[in-house]
Image (cartoon, rainbow, N blue to C red):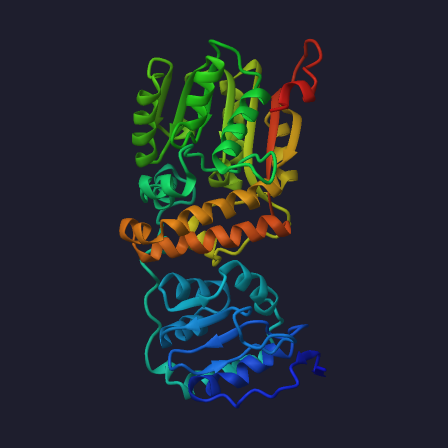
Length: 445
């Protein structure tokens, strides 16, 4: 039988009183425990070996319960100096905060706890804890080297190049290990439980080509072409001539190698070029896959008006991108903005469609692939975990930890619906010809 105290379910067996660092921190942790609806389903272990076991019903501190491990005092210094997600992120990336157990499960169990309401009196208790542990005698450590430090005007061409370089110019070998042979860095398209990541990514590439109704000899522009996978697939399977643009130097270099190795160098051109500088339209089709998240709200109109300018009157445009389902944008102090996608901005799908229409583009189709992205990220996690030692040697421990946390957290965000991903097919608004092909005929893959 369990007992309830202030809304917290507790095991009937009393835990031993905490000692060491755990005893000093316990008064603050207990305040948050009391506000968590079902108690704390994870344990906390400190650098001196002292512990605060889980308090939720059924948690005995065994293998089923994950443990947050604070390996050094600097972990608490970061959390106190930058409360919320930023402090936790810095401690994780620096290796001062770790998880003993399954990372995804730990993130699920800590989410509600992390978002418990903070009361003004908590600050006084936290200050007392910090003084007792001597945390205030030293300044917090500098942010990890992997944290983005961008300068200049937001979404200027120079700052965008720096932001893209931070994310993509890390290591082509690391991306190859994580993404697999297809080198596709966006949501896959699975047909069933037994589908592989590579098969699902190839199916996604073909889905895009079918939606664009590509024909031999047509010109295809790929904005943010990555490592050239869509262009190669479209040239091989649909006979198009393609141009890809990216502002990542490492992507462009490898994409050109892959194009040559595929045998389509006479039909595909890869440019190290900003999308705002493309001026050789018209194109019969334009694709933008996982790129417009980097554009920024203030640049959306320019981005889409540029697409319309480059697209032939009878052409089709497919925009594939992540959107947020909440009207509230994420904080600039979030893990994603500081470590993964600096200056990245997610919009609601309503904003995307409104901007498309304002640019003179008519939405022909809109498909959500949200569940597919959750699975894609889990597959990327498996790949990167299998390559972890080499990843650390290739990009450093901090970068490896960034990607480990990002893949796990983003997968949960897509599963829970706080993030989604949409493919929007649009065409220039104007007099139309005959009815377009039936969706089931055009898109079945």
